[in-house]
Length: 131
Image 1 (cartoon, rainbow, N blue to C red):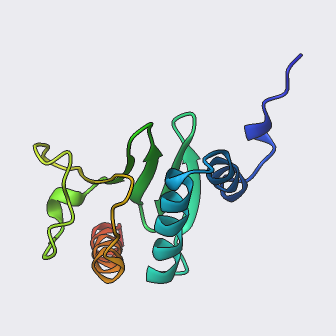
Image 2 (cartoon, rainbow, N blue to C red; image 1 turned 180 degrees about the vertical axis):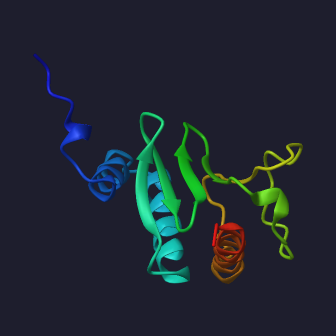
């Protein structure tokens, strides 16, 4: 009988593993995104959902970090409700709720703008939580 390692590892360990499995720009980008999320609010916690998607939450899901062959996609579940003064959102723009940022090889991350967007998502989550 095969053991499912994901059942034995914490979400943070699984995200560490994913980053190590991506020794190219995608791993570096996902690691940087993770660091910026932690800098935005150290209380954010990590989850591992939908068979292998890193998720960051605080009073609800803030964003996900999906990795594909040519892109690292950071999806904000309530992105359509967020102010994006730096126009970081460049994907999933047609939906009523989600918005995403696709990072490609060689893209520079506007760290301050991204942290601001993350903080806005946290504020939105906190404003929507049940009292």
